Length: 503
Image 1 (cartoon, rainbow, N blue to C red):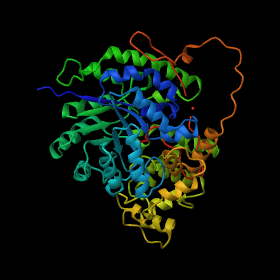
Image 2: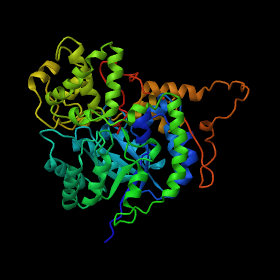
Image 3: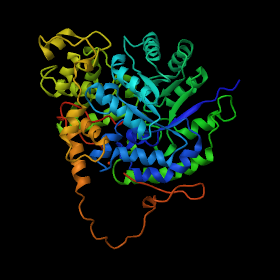
Image 4: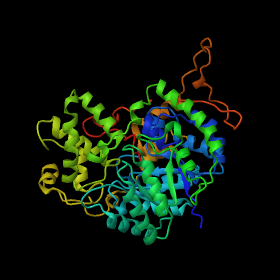
């Protein structure tokens, strides 16, 4: 009996988020869309995660317009996004009316599959996003944030999966954002999930620790239905395993994907140009391709490591790097073993920095650490160090309800605040998530500067020839920067959007 494996390609989202700080431009995507649309992927991940923020903040692009253009260019392939539950694509909880409107507009503008996760695996934080994804006709793919700790075992993940199916999941994703799911563990977990839940299982991992390909191969043998890969020019290292390698490995077996390697080669040729352009612009550091087994020891994803180094440089405390690495697991234990994924990865990492460079452990807390311990992000999975919690929040009562239940409707307030500059309903959502950044974008959009007179033409370089559609006869080339500390957040409080786990 054939057991065809389906593939989601991340070349348009997580691949460049993981390796190049989400700096691929829409103009670099569109020339390859025709051939990508013809390959036969289960889906193409192209939106959400850090792409929304990066479009507005760094690329002067409207993320909604990007989505519309991609949908028009790829009408035959499901488009997928990453959605942070009640955080949507931001770094705090939003009221349910904002979550509903975002789901509605994402689907109306072209998204087919919404992968929904919560950093704490608190399923209450997924309720609204699941409900509204299904209400507006999207494919609902809630995710289990995979991690390793004394409280995270196979029984725990199966329990979460069952709860998500009861809530309406069409697909269950195992989201291994730090490449911690080792091959034999993947086999066991997938096998168990296939026995316990009656929906397809979708596995997402990276290759940071060098185990991603082996993990996928074992998961395939266990019956996984879909896996995430990236076309080879932006694959491996902190990104996903290479699509072409897995397709070739399974060719002629009972798991044969049926995908066309020749068409992939055409698309890959284009993205090699894009990758080179990102390198030339300083956004793609070859170091992201290195195997980093520290991930298995400290559970720190590759992108979080790079952000950690950047933060320590700003603080002139680079010599404290290994001290901070060792402190991260201790903070994580004190905080109840949250999985290290946005935003908890940034919170735990930043607190570790503070503990090392601020004159002693828990001498000071970031506001985000206080919020996490207060319960503002949801229920922490393990037992919290109550002495640490008391230092952080004093005698404040810990929130035990769904945090969003404490939030009043916000959408009308946001709409009123930008009524003079908004051009589309989607602008309200951009503003809700990133108010300062969005307002700056609206100002530039609504009051464009006159174009400068063109300078004398220079010889065209290969990486600048990416404006014609890519076909099997005519390949193309490329575009897009390293994410600095988040401008809206104090440097000692949060790491930037983690380029590896954006999720």
